[in-house]
Image 1 (cartoon, rainbow, N blue to C red):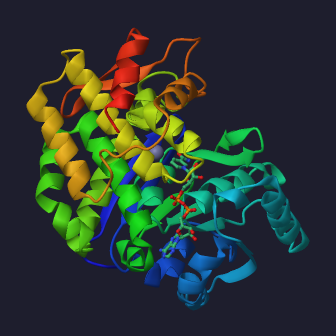
Image 2 (spheres, rainbow, N blue to C red; image 1 turned 45 degrees about the vertical axis):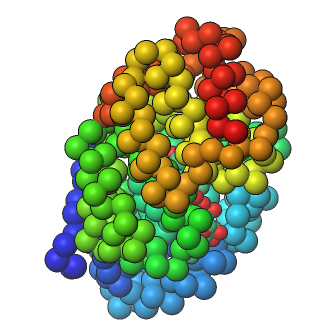
Length: 364
Ligand SMILES: NC(=O)c1ccc[n+]([C@@H]2O[C@H](COP(=O)([O-])OP(=O)(O)OC[C@H]3O[C@@H](n4cnc5c(N)ncnc54)[C@H](O)[C@@H]3O)[C@@H](O)[C@H]2O)c1
Ligand SMILES: [Zn+2]
């Protein structure tokens, strides 16, 4: 076991599991999984990129722990493959290989693989165990925590899914060395979001450590990931079915989803959320909820992370209109998560439309 491993325990109504964060964990993934199950075979879902980097390591580690791979399903990478066609191909592979109720499925990949594997595990044979091995920063700090699984539909993203908790999560920051820079930075947008909504001290720590994070300092990354997992886990524990407080996680996302959509996804999710957080903090200052100096710190950190804070080239009206169609909008009012200080947010559904418009315009 690597010596600097950190563990976060997630407890939901009738399930509890651990999220382990540590550099080098992947090397021992076989032993770790063998310790969780009496099954002697596992199934694996991954994508082509991830498999090309890590499949051999995982295979070797599973074999040395006495676990056989019942079947491995490697799908093409990318959000466009988070589809029913790929889910069905996984069902085919696993059912033909005679997967059993006790066979764990390992999700080896980013959020796309985690969400799809979770859905397959929730539904195949009416539910089998699954283990998350997230390989992007976003998947480590966000997608692998909370038990939401999903598949895209042509009508929209994540419209079909189920809640299904993994039996464990193993996040090894070493795997981030091969992650494209833009993906790493995109994950940082969610980390910044977590600190803003919950933790002023964590925000200050991230200000101090942002350069080391970008240099992939493993100790700093381990601490950052574990801390962010803890924040998300606490929010989810307090609201497992997304009825209240979990909405805080949408900070920056109501603006962000609209930017993503109107840009036809040329702004990545992380970039869109970064711009969305900037719009939200400007709006909060305009509404006299947030002090200017806090806004300045937030925007400075987003910028130092390598994320955009201005230069939006999209039509302001189009973004404004797209916000009204966000699926998290209750009735026709735009519901926004706005900070009143670093580390704390409130839900507002009374913000005048012209103030929202001005906040988007301010991103240009
Ligand atoms: N379930 C949830 O609560 C939740 C929360 C947030 C996001 N999500 C979902 O997560 C998805 C986005 O996840 P993502 O950003 O991880 O994207 P992703 O899974 O598409 O991964 C991004 C890219 O990086 C590649 N990659 C992954 N790990 C790598 C590594 N270590 N080295 C080299 N390349 C690697 C992938 O092949 C892919 O091309 C979306 O579908 C979103 O809906 C779910
Ligand atoms: Zn997000």
